[in-house]
Image (cartoon, rainbow, N blue to C red; front, side, top):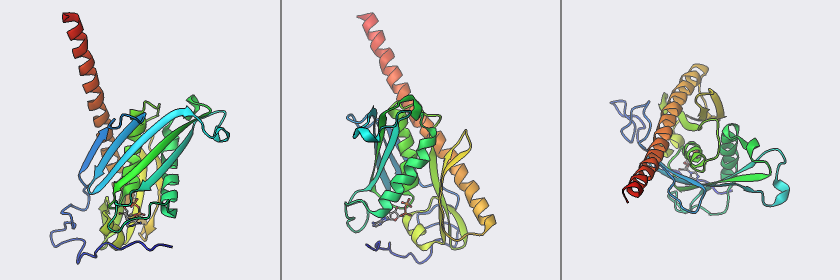
Length: 258
Ligand code: ADP
């Protein structure tokens, strides 16, 4: 099995001022950029930058299930492929799907399935392609946040969007939204996905060791961050649809004048 190349170990993960290697406070998210509807050929698409992560998501569907035997008579089948580009990490990644990518494809799909109204589209598939262009820790969470947006952009009915963020422990302290180096040289990493209004957690994994009270405190930090990300998701969708509405109104006005 391929061993992952280790990121260079920083001397300290937290400096004397309590700041992390990228200058963040312990409870701070990395800078986030969200975009929707940037691909013409897909039914829906979204892009996320979360720190150095750059992830593009495309959605196709609901469309007739192919091959036919995977179709479910009472609902749509969601398929998900999380894939890291060969140039997404320091050493070229083998483009063939790894065990890790298969696991992540599964957990991302399972974190989104509970919100999609699949029973409206029997015998169809909804395909999600999550392409990690650049990766720096927390890519499954960033992938979930962007995938929810892409599903919304495709007009697929959902109860609400899922947002995700990891929390972890570095040098004995809880820290939000770990980067790759913090994940590798820290003590724990817990990715969490939340359906905010329903209060439903659809992803909870844990790598490393935490006491129960650290877990409870860290989990609360992650849930708060998911809510912040969810507000950003809604904002970017509102902006897009406000622009479309404005353009339609301008067109209507122009037609009236003509
Ligand atoms: P996540 O990206 O959700 O945190 P992991 O904890 O498995 O998932 O991975 C942490 C980070 O390790 C990834 O974001 C990526 O930057 C790095 N990584 C994963 N796979 C590879 C690989 N094959 N080569 C180099 N770095 C990798």
